[in-house]
Length: 134
Image (tube, rainbow, N blue to C red; front, side, top):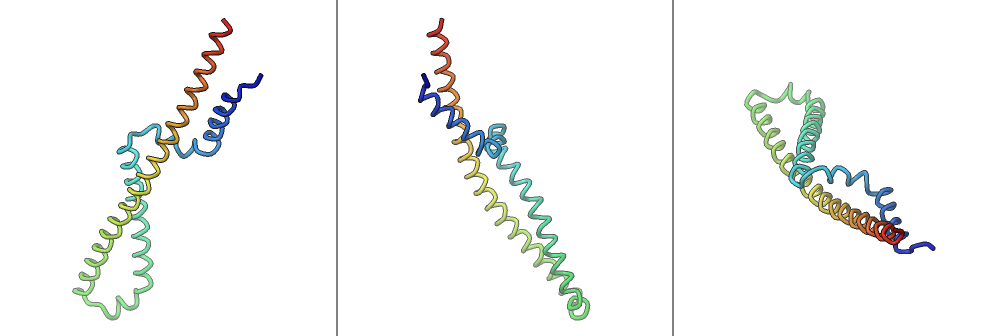
């Protein structure tokens, strides 16, 4: 006879393995602060590269104006503005990254806990069956 409770638990485990395991696997290997710090570090480098590429595109687009119109004090003021915008951009970008991965970690750990609860229930069912057989 089919044990319906076991089938339901196995279904939940299979559903987790199919859809969520890849995303949540990393979270199981890291503490909360370590996981978020790792993601912030990755975002810092990717945000910096993106900002440098945007500034390079702006510079190439404005090259003629820079060569003809700007003097040395203007270039220093422009460089200062670019650095200040970089600091503001990175602060906002890293704050968004922190919120996103904080939510993702919390949600993933909850799903991982539910997965382990289903596994424990299945193990208890199999243990009960083994005791009944003996």
